[in-house]
Image (tube, rainbow, N blue to C red; front, side, top):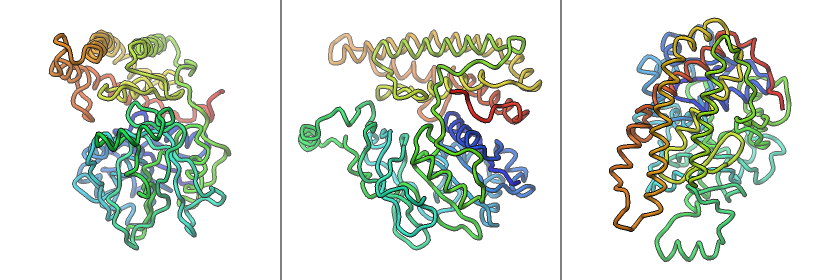
Length: 427
């Protein structure tokens, strides 16, 4: 049976969501690196579908290189299926860092706070399109996690499967939960100060689109249909897989909830499991510190939120990878990789956590003392952020090698012996 291939590079936590969803549904799948795509993996054994998780489209495009970009285009043009979520959707668009599968471009934001929306939002499904699940209802709730936007140009070549309507009960703009803000006073403040907190700009804009590229098809979704325990989104994912890839899931129901803190350790001590457990505990202690200082807050069991400007997304990505890696059983190759990297990783992690503790305190004090003569200069905070995390959306600093090691370790563990992994996580 042909399987679904997941383009893994530059996906991190969003790749984990796709992998978990396909595994929980019992769908055949494998992880695929950009170098394999560039070397002809899609033509040698064409997958039932190529799924591209979220992440930064620009970095995914760069990882593919000219050969990889051409290989993906050839695969879809020849009759393949491309399913992209968020950053994966952006990669499918036309533009400097796009594959050009869809003629639309990515739309620029007039205000950066517009890029800070997250949570579930109601959408209006298309009528009479086979890719819309029967019985989905007139206003299903679909999750978005800091989505970009399509440059909407109505045309016959691109069909809108769903358009945004009203925010759902867990929708946030930056670090503001909209459900907790009285609508009337908020509208007054928006009018008085020219603010754009309520996501009016999203209303009526496409969320999910589909079209043809040569003999193949693409679906681009700024909604993360693979989000854990999101029933209507998960149902739409299952429907797309059935319709586009011709694959039926072995297990029904929504993708199960994903509690990072309670994932049991399956990585054995003799292969360095204790170090992974220590890394997980250390990162959770750093997250707890940020929560104590009101810089981080719990969104759900797999995602925490952060005050605007704090690079919480990067920390969330590293934490999720460590949690999931230690929950797997390694084959010999993955065990050797971790034993070779373990000492350096743990040393770097300690340096990173030490620097992070000082940085979080500095951010909190800067917020507290803002407007006073004792305020911490922004250039000091910027320097600390760069040393720890690198530039925005370009992982660097002490953080980059930590993320790279965990990313490689997860990939090696899953691809070396996928039959060793359980089909469904224990509740």
